Amino acid sequence: MNTQVTIAGVTFKNPVMTASGTFGSGMEYSEFVDLNRLGAVVTKGVANVPWPGNPTPRVAEVYGGMLNAIGLQNPGIDVFMERDIPFLKQYDTKIIVNVCGKTVEDYVEVVERLGEEEAVAMLEINVSCPNVKEGAIAFGQKADALFQITKEIKAKAKQPVIMKLSPNVTDITEMSKAAEAAGADALSMINTITGMKIDIHRRKFALANKTGGMSGPAIKPVAVRMVYQAAHAVKIPIIGMGGIATAEDAIEFLMAGASAVSIGAMNFVNPYTTVEVVEGIEAYMKQYGVENVTDLIGVV
Amino acid sequence: MKQKVKARVMEQKQIAPAIYDMWIETELAGQARPGQFICIYPKDKSTLLPRPISICEVREDGKALRVVYRVAGAGTGEFSGYKAGDSIFVLGTLGNGFPLEKAKGKKVFLMGGGIGVPPILELAKQMEADKQIIVGYRDDKTFLKEDFEKYGKVYIATEDGSVGTKGNVMNAIVENGLEADVIYACGPMPMLRAIKAYASEHHIKAYISLEEHMACGVGACLGCVVKTKEIDHHSHVHNARICTDGPVFEADDVEI
Image (cartoon, rainbow over all chains, first blue to last red):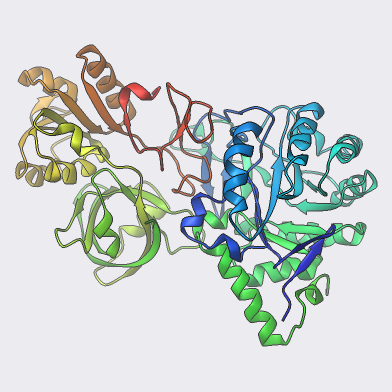
C-alpha cells in the first residue's frame, strides 16, 4: 500500500496536511499528535514584519462551523526563521510556509528569505484571507491581479509555489486558470467563506471585524464542488480543504480531484484529527484494495 | 500534559438561576491547578467548538473536578442537561493558573464576581495566606458562599444590596476597611479594570484571570488575545494568548 503523493516534484509520505492558520507552526499540536505522521505541516501565514492582527472578539461559532477574523497576526519572518523553522526541522514531515503580505514587495521579501532555507519544501501564497484590509484577498479576487502577483512571486521563488485561492469569487475556474497561466505550481482551496454573525441580545456584531471567514464542516460541500471545478479547469495539482473532519471527507476531496488535503478548523474540535484522517485513509485503502492513494484522485 | 479525554458526569445540580454545579470524574484532575480551565465538547455536531470553563474545585484524590458554569447558549445549555453517568469529552488542563507562591505569608484579597466566582474556590482552598474572600453577586443567589466560608473570612457584595455590601466587590473592600498585600481575582471586565486601578494605586500586585472567545484553547488559533504592555513572546506584537499565556496575568502587564 502506497500513500505517497507528489506535487510539483515534492513527494509527501501521505496526502494529509494542516490548513494554514489552524495549526500554528505545529508546536501547540505536537503535544497531541506525532507530526512525523503528517504529509506536511502548512504554517500560519508569515509576513515580512510582525502583524498585530484584529481586535477581539476574533472568533464566533456558527451552525456546523465557525467564523474567524484573526487578521493574520504573526511574528514576522525573522522570528519565524529563527524559531519555527528549526522546530519543524526536527520532524520527518514536509514544511510548507504560508506567506502573506500587504504589497507585492512584502510577499517577495518573504519569498526571497525563505529561498535561503532548504528545509522549506514549498511556499503557499495567501491571496485569499478575507480579514485584512490591504493585500491578501485584494490579489485573489481579480484574475489579472492574481496573474500579476503569481508571476512576480514565481520569478523570485526558489521553491515550488502554491497559490491559495478564495471561494469568494464568481468563477473559481477563471482564478485557477489565471494562477496556472502565471506559472503557479499548484493551487490550494478553499480559504474561508466570508460571513457575518449578529448577537441579537447585545445588538452587536459577534466579531469586532464585523465580517469573518467561515470554516468547519458546514462549508465542505462548497469546497468539494470548487475543487472539482478547478481540477477540470487546470492541469496543476490541487490541495483541497474546507471542513474536513474525517478520512471519508478527505477521500471525497481526493475523488473530486485534489492531490492532497488539509485539515483546518477541525483541529480545534478534535486535536487528533490529522492523524485520525491519515489512519482512516489507510483503512479505506485496505478495505477497498487500493494500491496507491493516487488511484483515488479525480475518480469521479 | 494537555489531553482530550473521555470523562464521566458524577452529579449535577442547579445552584442559582442559570448556574449549574457539575462534578466530573476524570484523570485530568490529577494535574489541575487553581485558575486553570478545561474545555468541554458539546455532543451536538452543530455546536462544534469546545467550551472553556474554569475549574472550581479539585477532589483531594485527584480523580474528579468540579465546574460551576452559567448557561449562556446552546453548548452550555446542552451541558446543563447532563445526568450522573453521562460520558463527555473534555480537553485539559489548560492555562497557567494562579501563582500561589506569591501569596505565601501575605495578606490577600481573593475576589470573584458573577461567574468569575467559581475559580476562586480552589484557590482559596489551596492558598496558604491570610485570606480575605470578597465575592460579588447580582442578588441574594450567593452561590458557593458556604463553600468559601470553610477557607477564610468571606465578604459579600450584591448589586441589589440584598446580602452584604450594596454594590460591587470594590465597595465591599471600602465598607469593611480591608487591606491586602496582593490580590487574586476573576470576574467581569469592569471589575478587573477597577482592581487593576486599585492595585496600581496601592502599589500592590494583582493577578487577574481573563476570558475571551476561544476556538482551540491550546494557543494555535490566536483567537483569544489580550493587549500586553511588553512584546509577547509568541507573536512579538503585544498580544498574549489568554488560553496559554494566561488566563491569569499580572494586572500591570495587560491593557484591559
